[in-house]
Amino acid sequence: MNLKREIYLEKIRPYYETDLIKVITGVRRAGKSILLDTIRDELTERGIDGAHIIYINFEDMDYEYIQTASDLNQEIKLRIKDEKKYYIFLDEIQHIEDFEKALSSFRATLNVSLFVTGSNSTLLSGELATLLTGRTIEFEVLPFTFAEMAEYYQLNNREFTDDLIYEYIKWGGFPLRFDFTDETSIVRYISNLYESIINRDIVKKKSRIDKKVFRDISLYIMANAGKEFSAENVVQYYQTNTGNVLSTRTVYNYLDKMKKAYLIHGVSRYNLTGKASLGNREKYYAIDTGFRTINTNTIQYEDSFFLENIIYNELLTQGFTVFTGKTYKSEIDFVAVKNGKKCFIQVSYLLASQRTIEREFGAFSPITDASPKYVLSLDRLDMSRNGIAHINIVDFLLHRVQLAVT
Image: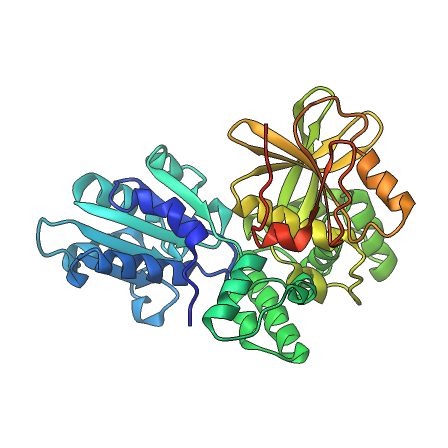
């Protein structure tokens, strides 16, 4: 049974009847099409006549005859029979040439509410996108959060316990991966999905990208997600392992391709002393830890980068804008900002030694800002001290506790 993803629906519902174009983006197989289905169901429940709901999936061969904005315009005009409002759902619209022209025309000339999805962040960029400036609102869909995993298990009568956090750390939250229970099948599914994204969204027919080189570099970047990024280190890794020469320009080009396909997110640094974003210095986190796992030889749960990755993605779904923090003497894992207010976050696997405790709590010592400070770990014992709150990661992910911001 499919999960009703309330974390996105509550954000989109206020726009069901507006003439703003609802653009739903995100990595492939994160659940965009299912979300569209849920919205269509909700419209039907509100009394909207099914004849006034138009749905086209451009990855369905039945619609292969629609290739251009003109083709799409003709198709929609044929389906509209009266002056009443129509609700139009266009899934994976990036396959249509100059689709922005059609959307702009629909919005200007028809009584419609438009919903579109795409799997590339360049969906609304470039010259044609100027046609839609100020006329769109975007929602990015991520794979299941841990709370959604719990809800999905309960919905499908599967036993859920807090200990499943370790499975979630390892295999992430792509919805279809929960159809499989053995690791061989899960690895095969996630690996095939990664390969599919490369083939369909990055290394296309007319692309000059070397597929093998891209795969090698992307796997390295994914395996090291959350760590300090250095293009020079990537170049050295590649040359050491292949004997071939690679430029930093190529690395940055591939990095950009990964971001546009929603494989990774770039996280800017926040200068806590100057209270400004250092936009040219970024860390990168994987859209899903399952992609990190298939790109590493073994998973070590004490590797806090996996946990950082999960916390980062969770913060995004909770509506935070996220930075990594930099003081004059240390780093803070995250500066989470919402509605102009913020908090500071350190992430650790376990606070298993006094040295670890002093390192994680002590990271905040240079910060004079009075905003809330948190240490998140898998420990059950509350270790809060000196005005710094300690929160169990599972409790945070399952929304048993909320972060305060000031």
